[in-house]
Length: 78
Image (cartoon, rainbow, N blue to C red):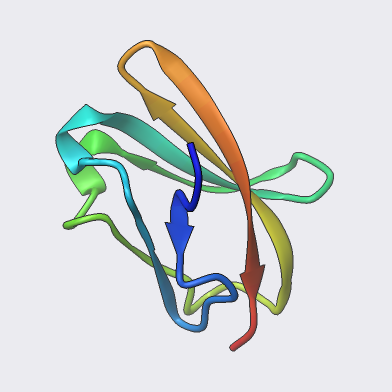
């Protein structure tokens, strides 16, 4: 899948191009794989994810959908 995360680079929030009802969870990870935040399907708000607490840098996004996982990167530039 292409362009899962937008905008990229992001400022204070990012969006996903996958319908929210297909998403089980979304995890924000450091480039080394350490989990910073996980959003479960109950906390997903119209595919908008806040980055207000995140320092500038490059992060991994893990998207857990019905039968698969997707990984992409996100550049945060607040």
